[in-house]
Image (cartoon, rainbow, N blue to C red; front, side, top):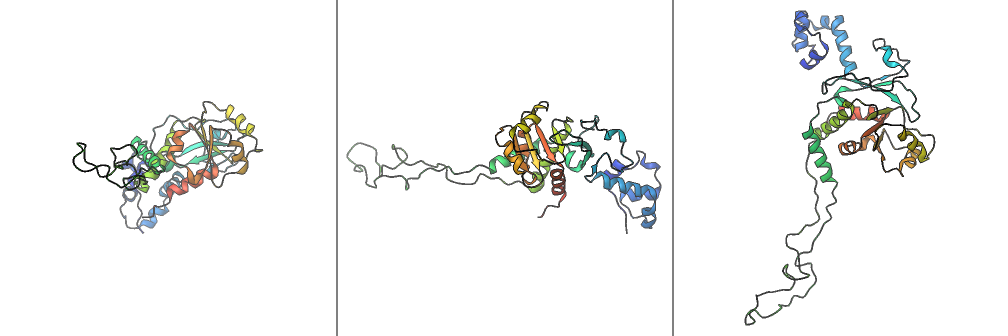
Length: 310
């Protein structure tokens, strides 16, 4: 069968000097069928490239006991508590390595965030469209005014048509009278606007990428789980007091919210808890710190990579 890889993947994984590649391999990278594609697949260069592609576009878990030989061991130090992100250019779809911890600040290894979800180009226009769509959709639209047939009042003509010197009127329920109707007033309706699913999905990716692009451990955090010792609020208060510049925190879990965590945070106005299915752009922008469990990250990445049903 024919072997083809897009040019973007070629630029990301192939050597910088593409012209130095063998002619058959170069054509295979460009998407052409070079005859005997089985021989190309057996080559070690293409095999390594395919392995890099699979690693690049997948979310994997790295721990201190991991057998990943290609991963630098010095990054798996238990003393490292900051994001392992050097000065980089944003929006290149590169995987990000982030330490994993918990509410007790214990070292739980590292996790790789998929670049196709956490490192997309930042676009303010998409964020604006998604936030506007969210705020419009959540409006109740229960506003209502009474028309001339709905207000209370008599149907008698207030005075004769002629002879009084006054303006002619047929009812006292008109808009020009006190207690009368409201002309062209609001009625119950939906304020929702239409926004394509791919735009909504891209907005969530951009919001997550914006948090990851700040490169601060206090902005984007990944926990092994969201288990708390007890339902006491002081546990969460003690954890938040140890964080730097954390004013509002959004905690995201993979499945249903733990009952202990729900009770521990319900009296804190600066801590909100959401399941992964409820994560949205407006909530991410409203909080300056995003805390996600390992399960939540996996579910979000899986949802972002699922094809959109037309």
